[in-house]
Each structure stands twice: as structure tokens, then as C-alpha cells.
Image (cartoon, rainbow, N blue to C red; front, top):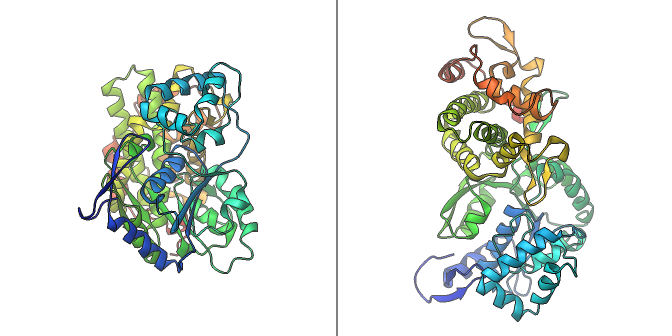
Length: 465
């Protein structure tokens, strides 16, 4: 993280990149320490919970930037113990290690290389937590990270944390943070929580609404909403760690979002701040829905640019329609939503999942937690948005037929994804039938309907009328 060019020193990281450190990095750390009431000899404790690709990269970026200030900050990451690495993954990992001289030298220096030789030969079983200690995320083997302090006991990891980074899938957030809440009962001050999760759930009673990971965390732990933030953006984890230029927004209370945006910002990773937490969080989940369909269309049409553009037109019009239900000023979300959708369609795991399903290389019976990729959060998001937008209490007046309909009736792509992925009524090939339906409205008409009718439902995000 670079501010001025004074007093520059150089550190070479495990990814082979040169980090230019200077006084401003320590100043940012000291500023955050002061804000959190830390005194000399009491380090700022930052803990990542969950070690998927983005959670691991986030922890590694913090370690690269601040880890050498050992007296002022401690950075560690929790993941579950016991997940073994299969022989094929061990063989691939060995190839990655030997293709990177810097990684090879680091492992030899740490006396850690021999176990990878033994695993390559089938003489030893490796585990995901020991890989992470050496800088390898099981979901991102091709991108070595810096070594990390890994803790497999959840209580040990979080009980005294000042900042907790939620890197868990939305489907696992509730159960883990309910356990964490037991370890925080005696705390005098609550930690700050940054959630990276992009999934959503639907709650239908007493009235339909979307539940996001930050709301799940608040309910599970009692940590005040002021202390819970969301960070998201159009980012691919491996590319960010390799210093591809990227940006993100951290959303939440002004007290924490502005200093944390400053603390997290790097020359290649620009972090802006915004006060609209829940809406940005929901948009992060919405784009995953349509990314799965995009992957299906790409695979089924042999990467036809024309077919993909037709799909893109329809899915973006549906997303625009849905944002008009969720947000009072939906046009302010257009840029962030489309940018996040675009990068997910290009290289995200949800689009990859759709492609593999359409090619028959994966099946729905395999579940939505995929080896080497982690949780495919778009599947649960399809279910959540469909159930929410099907609820009879949300009926809207059809602009042409002048009859009440559920909002989902104006979202044929979402309906078909639900029938393919959730109730499994049709195979992936049916997504093309939805696109080629002659009765489907022009996408422009759907946008016009959204822009000319008062569809906004504040209650969907738990807001008051």
C-alpha cells in the first residue's frame, strides 16, 4: 500500500511481486489502531473466517501489506480441519511449486518441500489447512499466496478478534456465526465484521423479504449493524492477488467504512465507500443467478457471440426490473451491478458451473459445493429470488393485460433457471427454449415497464414504507 514516495523499502512477496512500503502504511495502521482503542503492546487482531479463494486472498493481501508490523497487528485465518487433498490435486500442486522458483525456494527454506514430494508420490496425505499455512488455497491451487497463520479451532481464532472478515458462503454463515456468538458472550466491546459473502436467502413470513449475510450475522451474534460492513466488487480473487487492477466498495456505517476503505486500499486495489449496505449486498447475490444461465448458453451454443448477447440483453433487463422492486433509486446501482455481472460472466465460478452442467461434466446430484471451486452461491440465490418474487403479496399489475401477477412472471430467465436448478423439471438445454420463446417481450419493454410503474417495495429489504 503506497502513499508517498519517501523512505521507500522493497519487499519481495511470495507471488514474485515487489511491494513498495513506506511510512504511510504504518500511519494507516496506527490510525485504525487508535480508532479501535488499541494501546501499545496490544496488537490489532484481524481474523478471516472461511478460507475460500476470496477469503484467503483477502487475508493474504492484509498479511503482505501489514504482516511485518508484528507488534502492532496479528493476522490469522480460520478454516475447518480434516479436509484431505486427493492425489490428482497433490500432483498438480507439485507442478505449480516446481514451476515457481520463488515458491520452491520458500518451501525449501521452511523445510516444507519434502511433504509435497511425498504427496506427489502417494506416500503422504496432505490437508487443506496445512496447505494454507504454506500459502496454497485448495480452491485456487494455481495462485500461490504468502504463508498464513492458520487456526483450525474456531474459538481460539475469534474470541479476542477486533476485526472479523467473513469469507464463508452465505449458506454456511448462520451456523458458524451462531457458534461464534457463544464465544463472545463475555466481551465488553463488539468486533467490527467485514462480510465478503455474496449470497441471499428469502424469508417469507411474516412478510416476504430478502435476508443477506450481514443481517444473518447481526441476528446470530447481536453485533450491532453499525459494526457490520459488506465489501464487494467486480473482482476475481486470483487476479487481484496477482496485482491486476481492481476496485471494490465497502458499505456500511460512516464510522467504520471510511477508515476501513483507507486501510484496505492499495495501488492496484482501490476501495471506495458507500452507505447503502444491504442493496449492494443483494446486488452481489443477484448477478450470480444470471451468471449460471450465461454459462449454460455459452456451452450450448459453442460460445456463440450472438446467443450470448441475446441472453445478456434479457438477463440485464430482468435484473433492472428486479432492482426497481428493491431500490428507490435503482439507476444508482446500474454501474456496479453491470460491472460485477460482466466479470462474473467472463471468469466467475457461477458461469463456470453453468458451463459444466450444460456439457454434462457436472450434475445437479453432485450438489453446489464443487471440489476446487468451493460453493456455487448462485444456486441458492436462484431459489431465494424465485420464492420471493413469486409471493402473492407482491402482486403487481400487468401493464398490458391489466391483471395482477407475481413479479416473477416478468422474469422468464429466472423462472427457467428455477425449473432447471431447483425443481429439476428441465435439463440445462431448456435455457435456450426460454430465450427462443416467441411470446417473450422485448427486453427494452421490460425496462420501460420498470421505469414507468411504481414497483418499489421497501419491505423486501426490511425497510419501512
